[in-house]
Length: 135
Image (cartoon, rainbow, N blue to C red; front, side, top):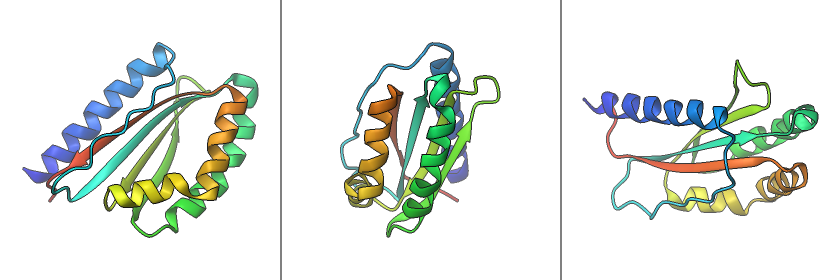
């Protein structure tokens, strides 16, 4: 049952991403309220990069991923590229709690990456999902 909740959340998120990339995402900042008793939080980010900036984006993500995975409170941090749209990327991140996410957003490597996204004109959609139970 607990695993089913996570699977449904991931399936729901994947569906949202698929429709989002087909309909160019708008910049949107969504930050969920801190959950009362979450086991962990999942952050999903859909990023559409201008076609001429894809290689620059990929290079910048190497450092971001390495540094983010080393952060206290980071349980996993992965980047995926759409098989059908080369300029559409998805981050799936698992964090211990909201404090870990807040600390991540304040790190120099994340701040630098955010500047790159602004400079390249990337379109982003960020969601935070609460995982309240897991098997």
